[in-house]
Amino acid sequence: MQITSVETYAPRLSMKPECCMVSALGSSSDNRFVLVRLLTDSGYEGVGEASVTVRWSGEIADNVCCLIHQVLGPAIQGMDPNDIEAIDQRMDAICADNWFAKSALEMACWDIRGKQAGVPVYELLGGAVRPLTIRSRFSLGAYDVPRAQQRVAELVDMGFDTIKVKVGGRPEDDVARVRAVREVIGMERSLVIDANCGWDPDTAISCLHQLADCRIDLAEQPTPKRDYEGMARVRRETGVRILADDTCFDLVDAQELIRSECCDAISVYPGKNGGIRKAAEIVDLAADHGIACSIGSNLEWDVATAAMGHLIVSRENMQVEKYPGDLLGPYYYQQRIVTNPLEIQGPLTTLHEQPGLGIEVAWSELADSRVDG
Image (cartoon, rainbow, N blue to C red; front, side, top):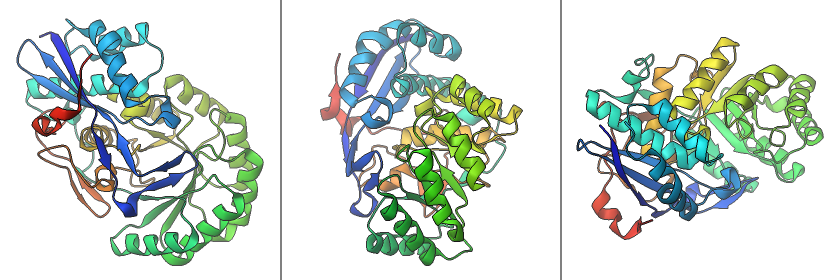
């Protein structure tokens, strides 16, 4: 079997008003991602998704489409989609970084491989080690106090027992927001904060000390990107468990996090890490060093969310029971781009059991968003 061609589509989906995101990375009321359709000479085709935001990985939809048509697609044309490691090596040899663009093609290869074998991708990754229904936390934007309290009360009613609050802005506003959320959810639920690299170490330490009586269960990315020493200092001086996310894109980043003893867990996901295989490598490396992993999110649509789910159910060290992650991306949007949406009920997301990623894209409805070379 050989890859013959790739199509790209870049629709824009609006977010539900109550789900618009505000964080240290900016605000968002819609997203324009890229869907890829990978075709083969055997009739099998695979789907992938590049869930891009320029503040996160430096990628935008138009550039992803251009890169796929002019560089990555031609490079892997004629290759066997079953040989995913060789495809990864080919893409890395001709293009630096661009994690999400590469991941879209890579997850499409996994989709083809699963369809050809007649099994879900998680079986190709070693089999399911946990149920296909996965519980998530909810990521609350950096809203003002009244809006944050109103929204979090709704989330509690929906069944969420772990709330992540975006911080990383003005410290006094961050502290007030987190206190307000803890007041609403009570002490019996878990409270996570996420600075998205918006704090420096001194600010992070100061804020966490001010919030000591709020019991912060986990602090995600409290220091700037790749400030491993600063993150270790925050962990050491506050005693709060640290989750690394924005600073772990590849295996070398993970090795440095482990060497620096600066985190208790690492957030991984296929888009950020350049694909399912590379994300699994990070999870396995972390397991060897006693570091837990959880799932992060870029508010993906169904295709990339499914890829994340297959990784979760196939790896013991994706410890989402202890460190709940984000598998709710499609819920944030007013529209869905697939004929068989993932089932999302409150904090629970359930994977399909169909072969491959188990997702069927409504290509006919996306015709107007097709982007040719």
